[in-house]
Length: 211
Image 1 (tube, rainbow, N blue to C red):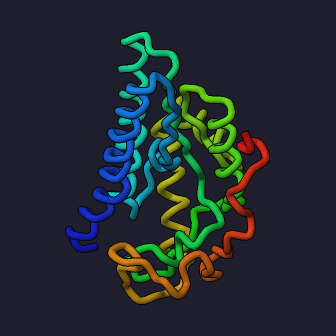
Image 2 (tube, one colour):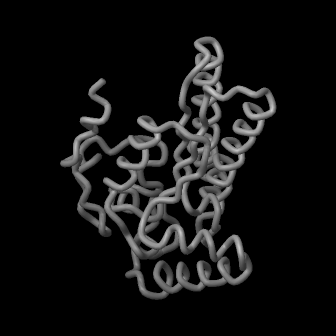
């Protein structure tokens, strides 16, 4: 993977979150209330091979959010909340749009889950603000518990599983930078390749946000 693409991943996933968090916290401090919800990944807790810059960025998002929670707590600010959502692999066009230089088709690390669970988690944090990390997806809680209690074993399992699924079992495919640098306007949100068939059928409107 070219170095400039690693840098772009960091710029998008980590620096983008820093920019957004910086702007949001300034507004929240001025109005003395607010809820910041940053989207990380379970890879932000449990790294996976072939995701080096993505893992670095998502670990950064987890650390950024934790540091902000500490700052607010130290200053006894209880009306501003910072939450971190950490999804497992979700059924979205992520893998068909991702940059991929492995020589194999990009496929999710199982199990893949319904993206609606992430929407539900975000809405719940809006309706019920709190300071915490929220794992989302089948097995996310168990995986996090395993990593907290036996980190070396957890990382070895993740390494073996990812290598098996994405390098040994996945079919050969051409290298691509995907939509890392520019969106694919023809297929964005509509892709059905590589397990992603999310087409926005579950809208973002939610009755819990009506008021």
